Amino acid sequence: MADLAQLTAWRDALMAARYRGVRTVEYDGKRITYASDGEMAAALADLNRQIAGAEGRVSVVRIQSSKGL
Image 1 (cartoon, rainbow, N blue to C red):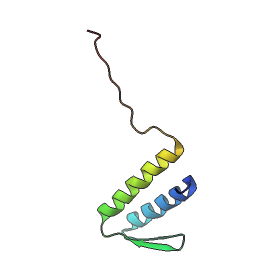
Image 2 (cartoon, rainbow, N blue to C red):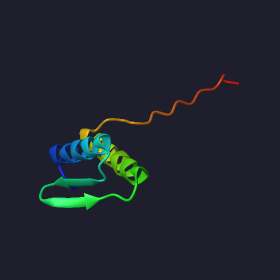
Image 3 (cartoon, rainbow, N blue to C red):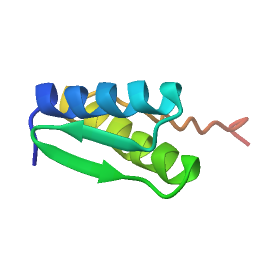
């Protein structure tokens, strides 16, 4: 698995390309071309999940309560 700095760099490169309207991203000497904006969005979501996991943040909190009856 990639480290936090590398994941962040990949995410930043992908976000910059997406905002420019470009579907091809280059980083670390590699080139990836995405078929659609939806595919780019899915890749961004996955990177954000991996970054959150690497940082140790909790992304979902579930609360359960009852009236005690």
